[in-house]
Length: 390
Image 1: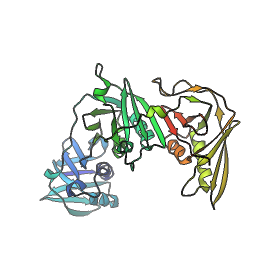
Image 2 (image 1 turned 90 degrees about the vertical axis):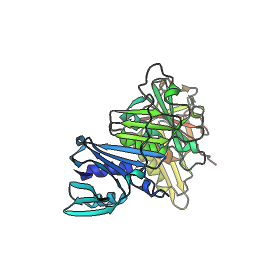
Image 3 (image 1 turned 30 degrees about the vertical axis):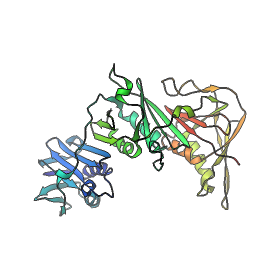
Image 4 (image 1 turned 180 degrees about the horizontal axis):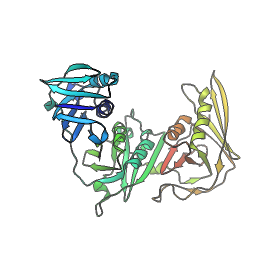
């Protein structure tokens, strides 16, 4: 094996595959990335037996010349080395079982392992659900942050995928807040939804964060079998085992009625919350949001620190019927309260704002100070449980 490649492009693809490699494992070979060189380009495969990621590099991605096909295992030392090189290109070769790297006029020889010991990428051959790469990236970004990866309820450590006709629903919750996003997809006609995406399909949060690297492509294909799911695009493939356990009935906690609705711009709302939280203490007790006369007043108190009072002008208005385009979302105005006081963990609202454009409009509907608060924007429904005001 021998090839000459752009250092930055090579490093980028190597890091994508290495992101799934375990830091600690009894199988030392899993700490490596399998690099295969062929006339078509390079592939980089990382695999921890629960999640596998294959990244493809071709001449379209940057300068690449394959002088001799072959394969080799590369570990994190190669990543560290590439970060220290100044040359735009590097040469990588395998000679007599030794990995050789040349760059900056210098050379390095590194020990490696037998590629035959590295597990191959499993492939799922079922009918795909086809989704736009940008749409899938948005859906993942707007839900995965709400997972609880530390929970003993394993299903809370992933994102639920649910197919309903031409719409794919993603939902995640840590039991204190819930994020739900809907996007349109392409499916094979005449095939049952559950034959494409089974009920209770929960994808691990870590795997989905790695899947974002595939979403720069125009289309991503999603396939599933009894125990795993696969995401494929022109840039590569991610395969992972599904999370065990039942995901809660998330629609049951999304309020349909409301007594007050305000419209806030994501950027100014996030800034106001950050300003209020300057006096927040490490163990936050939440922020008081007092909505009255077209203004959100945010009060924060930090014991032995101080207090803040921030004012943000907003618009009150009637809620549209749906924010998803599939008939879900929206709500019914059953009262028109002039004011409302609710205590919420401001960091939860910030988490949503981080996934939005600064100019995005957020619809905040309230149904009582002790009821779930609903935030909707561009296909996303976000529900946050309030804190006690005692």
